[in-house]
Length: 271
Image (tube, rainbow, N blue to C red; front, side, top):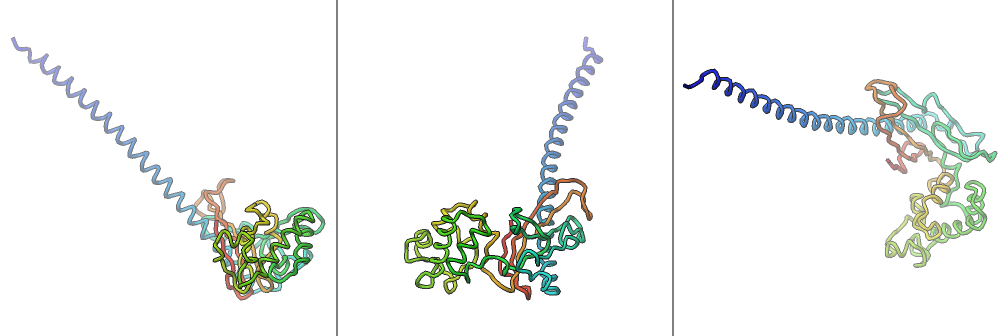
């Protein structure tokens, strides 16, 4: 005899198992979609933080340009006693939403106390001008400012001067330097002048040594008078509004820059 109740129980059990499997797969799908959406949200938040930090750094440069044009004499000092610092304006400025910006420069303390940091910009005239000074003055400057050994300072000064004075309006001494070998003699300068400090890395005397270059770059310039340089740093913090909610920013963006007294950008490097 056919048992209706037993058949119904088997049917209900099958439906229940099917429902459980359906819920399992739906749950797994929900977790996968949630993980994907979460990753996309994190990526979007990271991209937004990067963009905010970049714009804050650019705002720092624009604030520096405005201050230079309004108060050029504040930043025209050429010796340590004349250097100017304005932390209230250029240190962790939170006038814009999303984070803070700072503008600073580093210089070597005259008392042998190592490098120091001021907030604002530094006159390029306070540095060792590689385009204007003689071989002897460059060597002396590298010894005194960058604290290089005498023989190394002499070697670098000789290479810097010879390549600046090279023939055919090129930063080359006729083929014996890395300028000629690395670029087939095609790298040209403007009337025998260095255009950016990074060109020093192409000299054999530096040997592609970034640490040696970093020891020199803070104290040297190729821009000269009526120009001002510094580093703008933008930081995007976790909280969407002004200020910060943690000690670690979501993103940091930096810009090394040099601008003229009238606000013309002479050098710009973002990283």
